[in-house]
Each structure stands twice: as structure tokens, then as C-alpha cells.
Length: 179
View 1: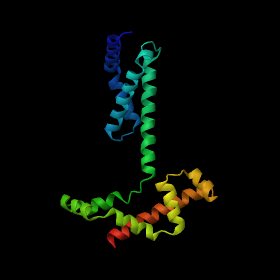
View 2: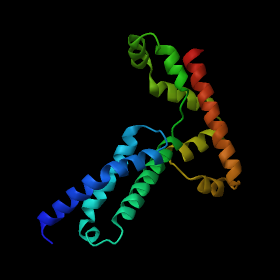
View 3: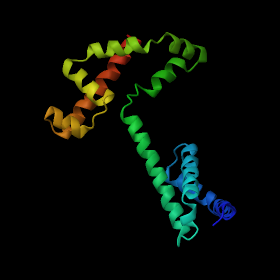
């Protein structure tokens, strides 16, 4: 087929299905930011563009679109999980409590907070075993399975140690910030 028919097909599919796919993505993202659903819907139609030749003869185009949209949402959730897995949120309320009344206070806090010295302070408070686990899990990003083999522990024991390490890091950061 020529380029013109591909373009016409894409425009037709987009007009017929975009709103439905977007609403489907909104339902799948369960009230998360609307931008997430929009991104998944857009990525679905990017896949339409990539596979346009095969889709023109596809027997169940709507089914393919819905399945692709679901796959896009699942991929997005996996990315979010991986990103959050290695972050240690201290507390959403701490920053809000400190800067609730003044954006200038927020700017001063960020300007005066030396993350390198804070990180060094936190690492000094950890034992040798905790520091090793911190490096293996948070820096080198070894999986729980790999850590369980390395330390000859069960996965549950490794998960518990990671949980306790996160808790200790949060407490140490709070003490460093608030005394």
C-alpha cells in the first residue's frame, strides 16, 4: 500500500478509537495522574503507526488496540515500581511542614541542604554490614534473589533487612535535619 492510504487509515483509526482508548487507560490507571493515561493512549497509537501495514488487515483491530493499551499501562506501572523501588522517601509531610507557609523558605532549605554531606552523614551511621547492603541494593541494584544468594539468606530475610535499612536511613536523615 502507498503512504497516503497508511495515513488515511491511521487518521481514521485515531478518530474512531482515541477517546475510547484514553478512557480505558484512565480506568486502568485507577485515578493516577491523567497524564499517565494520556501517555499510555498516545503510546498505543505510536504502536499503531509502527505496525500500520499489519493492522490494515487485522481481523480484530479494536481488540488489538485495547490489548496494546493495557500493555502500555502495565509497562508504565513497572517503570514506576522500579523507580520507586530504589528511592527512599523521607516523608511527604516533612517538606510540606517545613515550607507550607513560604516558598522562600523552601528555596532557602534547598539552597542550604548539602546532599553530599547528608549522604556521608547517613553512611557513617550505618554498620559495615548495612553499608554493604546499601551499596549492593541501592547503588549496584542487585535483586533480592541475587542478594539472598550472596549473603546465603532467604529472600524474606533479605527483604526484612532492606526494610530495616530504609527505616534506619529515614530516621538518620530526620535526626540530621531536625536534631
